[in-house]
Length: 288
Image 1 (cartoon, rainbow, N blue to C red):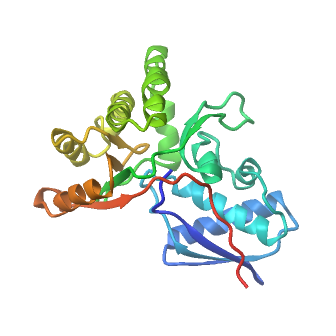
Image 2 (cartoon, rainbow, N blue to C red):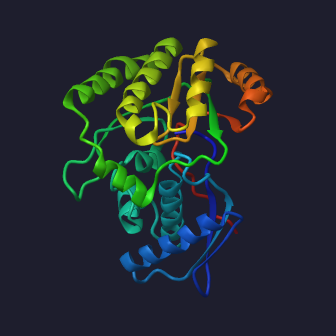
């Protein structure tokens, strides 16, 4: 989980469900989530939601799950249900049907390993949670006008693609369990960087027929090659892209690389931002 971008939402009782904020698509989703909550909890009063900070949609950053859980948590707290678990909140808004990473991240933050679902009614099991070294940084890179798969298109992509072979699943489990996780626990930057890239490379190769290459955006793929030539081995893509992150050892290193890339004409169509790891869950504040 990362510190930014993130959602900040405010909830208050109203005469009718409404949402305010600059992100019209997010506001439309809020109304949908409120309807789902009311179907699950019929005594829920009408609510006014205000979005003051948001996550870009279809950027591979889990915007739908985080917004849904933020709304569900805000409504539950507003109506006197304190500290409702995220699994319950997720069921109310229809999230967590494929992966529970976003749910566990909303609860606890950190570096998370989801063991997958075993049964149609169960959420993915959290296998491990590790504190991500707080002084490390991630450069987020997104190519302009590029969006990842979502909704029906994503469902069709999974349905049309063959199942992942057990041999590849075994390789990914080995990388995660024997390379990536131990390196993180030991705060070994070099080993973490290589494991991070190797895991993403294997997954990207498997989904290349759907997304058009190891990286969903060809320009981002070229950028990944460039930064790896510069010695930044830890490059990974979010699910279906289009956001890619570059692991840096500290704030200074991240800022220097980001400024250099952002000021190079070759990457003028890309957007860059430095973010911190987030090792805690969502916060609730009460306003007078």
